Length: 460
Image (cartoon, rainbow, N blue to C red; front, side, top):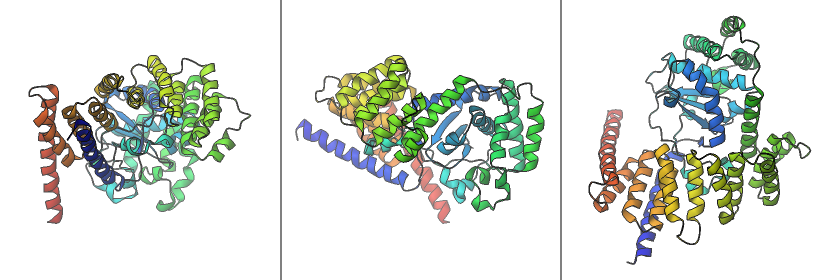
C-alpha cells in the first residue's frame, strides 16, 4: 500500500472513532458548550475580582458558556461555573450578571457541593454537559454556533453537582454581597435579578425557570440580601461604560449567532450604526450566506477600530466558512498579532493553513497547534487538527498519538487506549510522546476497569 493510501486508511479509521465518540456524547446530552475568546475574556474580567475576593485562585476556577437559552447558572465540583447563554442575554446590566457569578462563586467558597446523583435524576440533569464538543466544529464546521466556536473543554464524565437548599442559597447571597463590596461594586444587580423573577416563587415547580427550580427563591432571602446591600458604601455605584459596552457586544454576538435573522434585524435595524448593531448584523448576514453584506459590516467595524482582534477573527470566520480559505489567512494572522496568547486563534489559523493546496504551511500549522495545546491540553478539536496536520506531513505515529489525546480528552477511553497502544508501538522509545502514550494507556485501562466495576455494581 502506498503512503497516500496508508494515510487515507488511517484517517478513515480516525473518522470512524470520532463519529463513535461524537454519537456517544451527543445522544446523551442536548446542550453544548460555546467557545469564544472574546466572550470568555469578558466573563473572566467580570468574575476574577469576585473569585479572588472569595479567597480562591481565579486560575483554578473554570467558567463555561452553555449554549442554552434558558435562564440558568450552576456550579460543579472541581470549581467549575457554568453560565447559560440565556442568563447572559437576560442580564440588563453587567452588575446583574456579576451578581449571579458572585452568588455561584459563593457556593464554591461555602463548600455547598456534595457527591450525588441528584443532577442526573432531575430537570437539572439536562444541564450536566458533556464537554469536549469540539467535534461539532470537526464534523459540521459549526459556523452558526458562535464566532470561532471550537469547543474543546474536557468531557465531564460523572459530575458532582450542587445540593441546593434555602440555607445554602441565603449563604451564597451573603457571600456575593461581600465579594461585590470588597471589589468596590454594588450588590443591587443581584437584587434586581431576583426581583425580576420574584413572581416565580408562587409558580409550581414545573413552570419555574430552571434557575429558580434549582435555586429556591423567597421574599425573605431578597429582604435579607437588601439589608446587607443597602449598608454598602458602593450600593449606588453604577457600572462602568467599558463594562456596559463589553456586555452589549457579547450579547450582540450571541444574538447574531443564536437568533433568527428577523429577530436580529428587529433588534438591530439597518438605521442603527452602533458597534453592537453592526456586530450582530455581520454575524446574521454571514449565517444567511449574504457574504457581501457580512463583509461590509465587519469591514466598517475594522475601520473604526483596526486594533480589535475579535473583528479580524470574525472576518476570518466569515471568509473561511464561505469557502475563501486563502483570503481568510490574513485576517486571522492579524488577530493573532493583536492577541498572541489566544489558543483558539491559533487553532483557527492552523485550519486555514492546512486547507491550502500545497503542504508549504503544514509545519507552521503544527507549530501553532502545539502552542495552542500547551495552553489548552484538553482541547479535543486542537488534537484532532494536529492529527490531520501530522498525517499531511507524513508523520503517521504522531498522527495516531494525537488522536489518542483527542479521544482521551473526550473520555472516549476505549479509543484512547487503542490509539495510544498503536502509537506507542511506532513512536521512538523514550520520547515525550512515547511517555505520554504510556500514561494514556495506564489511565485509560484504569478508567475502563472502574467503569466495568460500576456497571457490575449497578446490576447487583
